[in-house]
Image 1: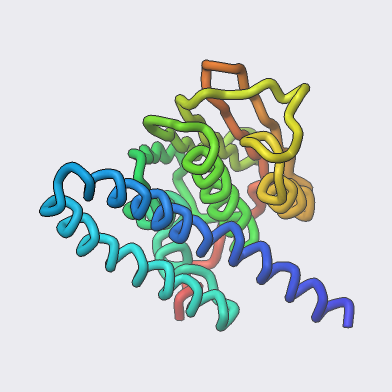
Image 2 (image 1 turned 30 degrees about the vertical axis):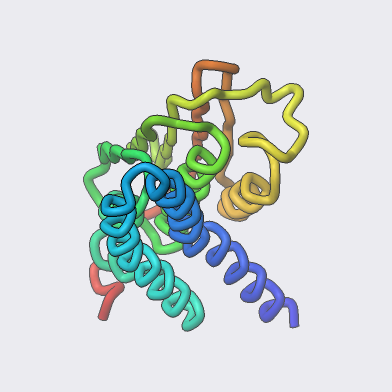
Length: 212
């Protein structure tokens, strides 16, 4: 029963941190279409056509998670490629800089990947960011993940749980990180953006046959 509860909780986090990223992007872009439609109906029709791909991506992610698997790009090509693929539907530019030279254990890569998506999602939903930078690096046996946005920022000391510094998203992210002995650090200043940092024990090289 304990194992089953843990599996259900893990799937809940994966759906929140993974598929919800696509749905948030879809909601933001639908709002943009509604605004554009009042000024340029032709442009709005074009944008609506493009949103079909975003919806299909969200459906594919949900289907994969319902079978208990991680995104194929993550399994086959690693964290950087998976974050880039997920960010294709983002309404703001997401730049990924990867400074690692190897693959990591499955649970390490999953924590880093879903942590990136959660941080990007928060930036889209709350920060009014014009862009997001994701940096992946390995240092002294740790996988270092940093997600920085250039949005409005906030004061962590007065975050009430409803803005970029609170809510269930960061709680899920912190819980996932701490399960691996990782550390989560949040830096934000009003008007100067927010940086989410995750420091994960890197472990040995990941297997080369994970998609077989």
